[in-house]
Image (tube, rainbow, N blue to C red; front, side):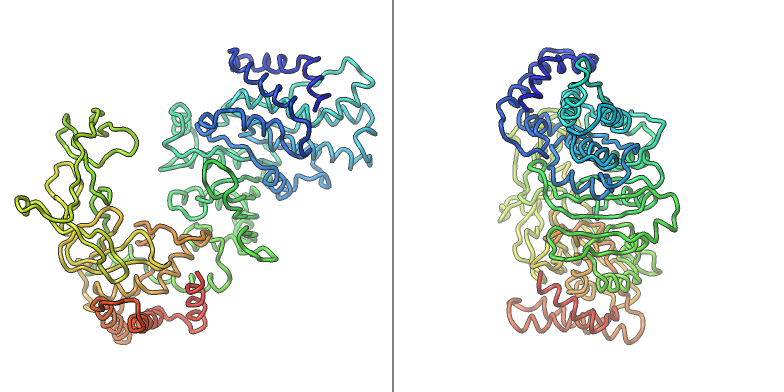
Length: 627
């Protein structure tokens, strides 16, 4: 490091690089920042050779808020190493002459390891055991190969400067081989482009694309960049997108057919409904070679990650028959699981990576049944599922004096979302009460504050006269099933109330308005929702990669399988469920052997309704007990 820093100073390298980015680095502040990093590097005497030491110093020098605003985070060496191995960018393969790009390169965590591997490839291909034994000719060829084939892009000019320096540091030994004979030799500038990847255009295609794209949700993307995305020729700029999914689309478009792709990204890709368009895009354009659930890998943001390895493939049949390697950091599996890519289409393009062969067979059986959302398409049926009052559980509201409307307190700033008028804390009040004031009895209705499975745990009262609050149609709160967003002991948590009682938006209200089959009623539906079978299906279909039960979102409720009893045998089974659900609702104590025996009867009848085999029942029961 000392020799390298002396070389930088002697050759005025930093000045030269800054001049190269003169259009984007104009102020003394950036130059001072860069000099500060060089100063910190000079204070480091020992470091692991494989680490991106410049990136590490940059990460710990740059303000965290600045990095967060860019979605920019230093990539650990272990991740870089794994991804490069997974895409086959290794010295033992013919990577010389192959083009590789990182479109969010930062200070160069991926780029420097790419350069080191390409250098090692030259040693291997020329049967040379060390850099010091390279001829000047081969040393120049190696540097030229880096110039021609290794490309980085980043929107941050400081990161681009550091990436240039990082490449020179990675090649410094080779430079010394040349400099021993040609003192006048100077490093060239490498292809590290300071520009927005959204506007990067390149006629040629790449053999590899790797990286750690920025993690920004749509609301955090700067308006200028959001405008480029939403006016650009993208397929993934619809709905509530994340920045990283646009980088996936760019990456796949830049690849040659059969080119390889490796990213570390948030695991929200796997099953989140907002990412369905992204999963289908991947399915339609690439073979999914590997999904590795590595868990949290960065200090900020607090997200759980996957490594995604793809190969661009134009032929549908080849994509469908591709075997996907599934790896879970939390698992003790000795060999990766595999399943064929065509299964993903049957799972509505969700990446259900934790399913084994038994899970797949059970899910396949259940997916043959209609979903709850399909019931309204059946003649004579009408059901609704609605969120409760658009209000926090505590019932805080604030009055806008300009709109003359009440609204829930805004999460970030005290500004009215309708008229942008400044709100004041003195205009806050609570509309959920433990007791009704005598003078206001006509203004209040019952409010379900909390529930457990089969039980209303706590009730309060809510003022329903505040103009501006979205109470919803009161009809949805009368005689219906209530579903809690959070599970209870890893089971879907629902109960029933035949009175008019409002709920907050943390609960869903499922109501059967019309049914031509008497047995298809709220008690039957409640038994299905509270069954072990549907909780198992929910976990495996919507959150199988997580260690905790996922939040129950309304679109997932609508996607649960349902059995409409039609034959006499099916109606008899439904009647058993109804009878025992009523018993559960009437029990005072649900934590005893009686309630467990009743629930077992309900579970057995639900298994019977869906015709689940004895072997599968045992498997499901054991799995759910071990959660």
